[in-house]
Image (tube, rainbow, N blue to C red):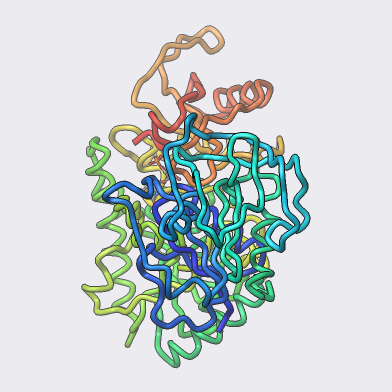
Length: 505
Ligand code: XMP
């Protein structure tokens, strides 16, 4: 059993970030709702209380009994977490005279374990409307800024600490140092690495699955690919992967990805279902209907293949930690789930196995590298399940797919050539349902318009349009118009999300 830190989530926007930082410090952690400290606390080395959108004195503020935690584990309260510990011990918390947001500098820093290596003058990031105005007697201020006297405190005789700033955000220069110091106080060995994750997960999967058979839908994306390789390590041939060509993949994608999968030793069935999808989609223009038809078609094909296999008991899925956290979320955020085989486990009486469910995306990539997977699979841009089906605006037809595949291929190949591929979150071409007039040679043309989309993002929840160099855009436009028959105009999408979305449909 790995040692772990429990992060109790009081609803802050940065709770996930705390988790990521602790993992970056090679320590396993779990983010749980503020009132769900685990009954089985095996391996727990320390507890962090997150920030919150509430004030401690709000009637609906999230509150939890700390007596079972304080003194038993080292505890670190961050922002609301710090205010909550102070407030529930008899301290005072009040609205700050001026709201305390953004950059601040620590003017005093005590020589205590939590702040080892932190110098006065260090920049910290504040984000709170309240402030601690008095501390209980056993609490001691250990750092302050000019505006926030109790920027950090500790409790005498306990390993309990509070910081009103956010050590987890990038702009707090000494943040990693403080979190690392806290892990030292907790006595963490910091041995959570990709290799240790693989070793323990493969052993767990072996124990859980025994000789059972598992099926898994591959998408070409990093999550499902890493899931497949991990499962393959654990159960070998008892894993069957299914990769469906719905006719809406990128140019050469099916063959390339199948080859990559075979090189990895996966037992993978490739299904050419293009005709079936084109037929079902003929004449359909409405985006949500297209999505539904593609989703249903996918399930039908997958189910048909799965039924050909005997005695399958499990469905593998590439669910990752942000999905899990959202589904547990106390603030009730709607789960954003694009799982292509939703509904299937119940229908086929399959149990779910999700070996990546506790990992963040960057960790999935690291595991992928450790498993010996190639850049082309690991650094691949996200690509939606319905594929080019939602990048061909309006109705879909094989000829339009061909045009878009060619244009997209030129765009993405040049992006790699110019060394821009890894600097954007995702990119793709979109075929618009309008024609425009042009002139080629002496001929008037009346042909398709292709839009190019490229965004920067860290999680696809928000995104900015990528500021790609003009020389690159000029080259892409030229190549597409010269080489792709049926296109005479290329435009670049300069919308951010929100208010736009990444995909056009
Ligand atoms: P939007 O367009 O909502 O996209 O800004 C956010 C991210 O989700 C991907 N996306 C999808 N993925 N099925 C998927 O598997 C879908 O229906 C779907 N729609 C959007 C999109 O590519 C981006 O990464």
